[in-house]
Structure formats: C-alpha cells, structure tokens
Amino acid sequence: MEFNYDIVVIGAGHAGCEAASAAARLGSKTCLITMDMNKIAQMSCNPAVGGIAKGQIVREIDAMGGFMGVVTDKTAIQFRILNRSKGPAMWSPRAQCDRGKYIWAWREILENTPNLHIWQDTVEELIIENGEVAGLKTIWGVTFRCKCLIITAGTFLNGLMHIGRKMVPGGRIAEPASYKLTESITQYGIHSARMKTGTPVRIDSRSIHFENLEIQEGEKDFHKFSFLDTETRHLKQLTCWTVNTNEEVHKILRSGLVDSPLYNGQIQSIGPRYCPSIETKIVTFAEKDHHQLFLEPEGESTREMYLNGFSSSLPMEIQIAALKKIPAFRDVVVYRPGYAIEYDYFDPTQLNHSLESKIIKNLFFAGQVNGTTGYEEAAGQGLMAGINAHINCHGGEPLVLGRDEAYIGVLIDDLVTKGVDEPYRMFTSRAEYRILLRMDDADMRLTPKAYEIGLADLHRYELMKSKKESIDRILDFTKEYSVKPETINTILEQWGTTPLRHGCKLVDLIIRPQVTIAKMAEQIPAFKELLDRIPERKEEILEAAEIQIKYSGYIERERFIAEKVSRLDNIKIKGKFDYNSLQSLSTEARQKLTRINPVTIGQASRIPGVSPSDINVLLVLAQSSNR
Image (cartoon, rainbow, N blue to C red):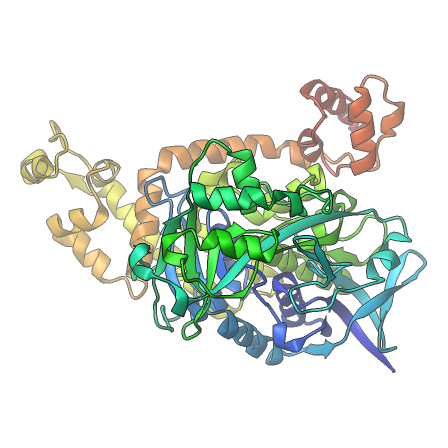
C-alpha cells in the first residue's frame, strides 16, 4: 500500500504534534505517524509545562499560533510564576498538568485539523532519491511518498531502559523502541551518538503521610500560558508538596552505587547536567546532608504522584528502601520505580537554521533527536520545522528567528552553531538579550511574523493589536501627563518614596519601585478613566505597560546592542571561502568553520573555538569579496 503527502512527521511527541499541526494549518497535506495513538503528546517524565526560560518558550509557541500553551491552560491542575523575586526578564510561568487529559486535549486538536491525517505504525526506513527525501517505509510494509519529512522520534531510536543491572529495550516504560531507522539515516553520512535521560519513581498517594510534608500552593491570578482570550483554571487546582532527603536516605543510596548503571559502566552516554539523578547528586555534592524533593500530582483524580528530584536508575529495592527513610514515605507504595533510558540523537550542527539537514534535502529534525531535553524545547523546534517544511514544499524563504527575537531563536542557533555534548536545556542565561525576550511580550514579538505567513489567525492578530494599542495609550498618557508636587507629595511620603521638588511627567513617577500604575490611577481620575476603558485582559495589559515603563532604559540599551550585533548577521559568508586554505585563521577555526559552514559572520562568531581575531580576518575577507 502507498500513500502520498506533502509532509510526513515521524513521532507524535511534543515536537511532532506542533510540527504536524503547523504544517497542516499552513496548507500542506500532512500525515503524523505514531507508534501509539493513545500516547500522543505523552509527558514521559513530569506532567509539567514551563519553568525558567521554558515558560517563555511556551508563550512564544503560543504567540506563533502553536498549541502547547492552549493545551496546558486547559489541563493545568496547578499554575505558578517562578522567579517573582527577580526582574520581569526572569519571570517564568509553570503549570502542573493532568497527564491523561493533556494527551486527549492534543488528540482532539490534531483529529480536527484540516489537511492532517494520523497513522499508527513504526517507521524503519527512509526513501532517499538523488540526495533528497522521497518517502519512507514502515514495519507493516506501507510506503509513504512525501516532499518533506520531519523526524521527531524522541527517545525511541534504539531506546534502552535501565533499572539497576537490568536492561530492557524500549522507548518509554512498557513501550517498544524503534529499530533500523537510525541506521537508515546514518548510511547517508549523518552522524548519530547516544544520550541518556531518566525519570523518578511514581508513588501511590494513599501511602503518603502528608503531615510530614510542606505545602506548596499554586496561584489563582490572571496569568496563564496562552495569549488568547480563553478561560483560566478549567480543572480543579491541586496542591504540590516539598520534602527533604536525609543522611539515612543517602547511606542507602550509596550502598546501591555498585549496581548503578551510571557508575558500573553499564551506561556510557551523557545525561542532563541540570536535571541529575539522585545518585549523581549524592556523589557530586557529597558534602550536602539533604536534597529537596517536590511531590507533584499526576492528574485531577488519579492517586499517582510524581517525586520530582528523585530521578534514579538504581535497583528498585534500593530506591524503595531509601524512600522509606523519609518520614513522609515510611509506608510508601510505588506504582513503578525510576529508570534511565539511553537513545540515539543526531549532531545538530548537521542542520541549517531552518532545521533542514545539510546532507539530505527536505529532511528535517526536531526535538530530542537534536540532543535537547524538555517538552518545551522540543515543541519549539517542532513548530519551526513544521513551518519550514511547509515553506520548502510551496516556496519561499525559510523562517529563522533571531537571538534577539525569541528564546526559540537562541535554542536553534545554539544547536546548529555550537552543537551539544550533553542534553541541551534552555536557561535565561543562554540568552544575551533576555530583557527583550520576556514572557509578557512574546505576542508583540512573534504574532505579526506568524500572521504574515498564515499560521496565526486573524482573531489572534487582532487580540495582539488591541493589546498593543491599549499599552501605547497608557504609555502616551504617562509621558504627556504632568504631576505637581502639591497634589502628590503627601501620598508619595505615605508610599515611602521621595516627595517631588518640582513637577514631573507621570512616567517618571511610575519608574519608581514604590509606585505602580494602579496606585497612580487611584490618584488621577483621568488616568483611571483611561484604564477603565480597556475592553478586556486589563491585568495583562497593565502588567505589560508597567514593565515597559520601569525597564525602558534597560530595554532600549539592549535593543541598541542587539541591532549593533545583528549587523554581523547581515554579512553572508556561506559558500564564499575554502576555510582550510585560509592560513591566517587558527587551526581550530579552520576545522570548525569547515564543519559547520556558517551562513553569516554573526553565526561564525558564536562557534566555540572561533576567536575574535578569526572574526576580524573573516570581516576583511568578506569586505574584499564584496568589492
């Protein structure tokens, strides 16, 4: 049997769902192939979305017209904004979700997307003709012909799970691995390697002594992930809990290290530095007598709970014995132990910024197969791969987001320019322009781009325009309205801020830490009247306006720097030089530039091992070449 599509997506995880949805809604006839339709968008590890920098990525996906934010809002059972004690560039939304409802919310979206079909099967072979994707074959002998192919296979490629010395093939617990596909890809010269990740024990809440845990409540304000005018908190909001390990726990864990796959040589691949297993924590931080754990619900009605911070591949009897030394878990009953999984990934420096392979035309990679970790990083890549695969099918220039435009841009540029030597996780510190990439303004940055290509619909675009117009009216009023000392000084002293000596513009008062837009509106009737005319989403708009006022100096300075640096990204050098022949470059620079073949001077400057003096050489050569 043979089918024909514009685009086929292999794998229905977070990357695959966004890729298939985007491509189909843009107008490409698309098929999403998954091994199990009941596990679409499965949250393999913690059923949580967002977190530091990751939350900003989800808001960017939403601003572009993706669905991760919408699905998260529908299925959230706890919502919080992290890093509130820091500036708004660091604020990050995070939600605990109902695992089962998340799957079905995504499946409902996909099954009702025009141009999109779903096929349950396992892919084992690519069809490549004249260095270009032509299709694929499945284990059931079905052939799919297509113009573009997107691989989003997650941890399933030659997946191998570990619990103690026991090894079981699989892509997730109780799910089979995918074989032959990696070999089908690498035979064309694409390099693969191995990585590993892990997940914690799952606990029956009926066996927990909650009186020995510390409560961690969620928030119930206006914040959510999607910029759309949708309701918040559809499901019952639940509590999370925190608890600490102790020396008795660590003693038992240490006794099991001899059988740990991480320390007995059984696992050779590299795991995530910033989400280490509990056995890695007690070895790396041997001086610490405790580590914090987070107990989080898996759903609105299930008894299953997730023990965040206790990822492990130790023997199951060691895991359970150690847990029982924590008072809250002294009678613990588990659903399943933690485990580690090794899987294949492909060196992302073999990709263009569009996520298309440099080696095989019209072949795209997105998600964990590019060496990343996290649902959000995967979904952001999937969205961009789906967009660019559609563009490849129907013509046009690839859509590439800059480092000053989106965390997704930082993510993809890091991957294709620097590569990975461990599972890549996004942090705010990776973005040099993070004050431009705040969670509050992702729609302003990205919705116009998505609307232009046809992914964001008119309703979303009008919502963004309405928000921007309201913010602009607030900013204009504060810049024009004058405040006199005699009308405000008494209030300023009550608020603990210095009284005025002379009159000033309202904006100059709102910049002060003790002063807010809401406070000033209570003192200035005309200002209050303006704010009362905001038609909808008033709290969101006031927050965004206040951030722009209070941080205007930082925002302007960072935008100036970004524009200055972006000039290097306008100098194209791809295909202009034989780097191996340029003896004025360092040996390492010649090797790295040849391997990565950067598109611009800007990209070349971000390659590890390419020094500022190497960049100066390239600038001189580029100018000579242009002349």
